[in-house]
Image 1 (cartoon, one colour):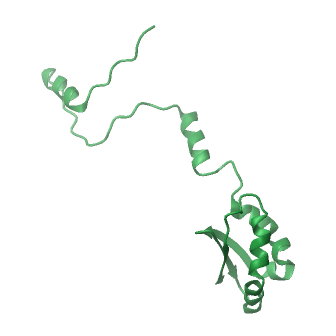
Image 2 (spheres, rainbow, N blue to C red):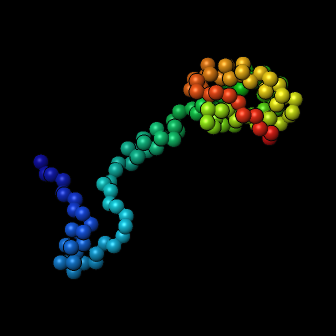
Image 3 (cartoon, rainbow, N blue to C red):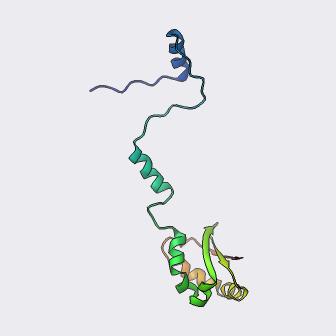
Length: 126
């Protein structure tokens, strides 16, 4: 079984290049072993959760059930930052309504898959 060729340091490669009258490698980048494309794609899918629904997506799907249709009409869950759900609210009355019921909303949120870490709401005008 043939073994893989050994990798040499850049200094050794430059020494060999000097002996053979070839140009030396003066770059600062590191040489890496080639990786199969499928491996790289699988790692990216896991890292950026591309193949999975995000927490925000599952919250948006259930938003009208969590806060009621009238409140959901004037509000939009945006993102989760530092264990807080950021919600854009376009009407002052709805903002007050969500603020008054935020504990019960957070309690319902925590029951959704992947939302157990949410601690509260951050209401923003928008």
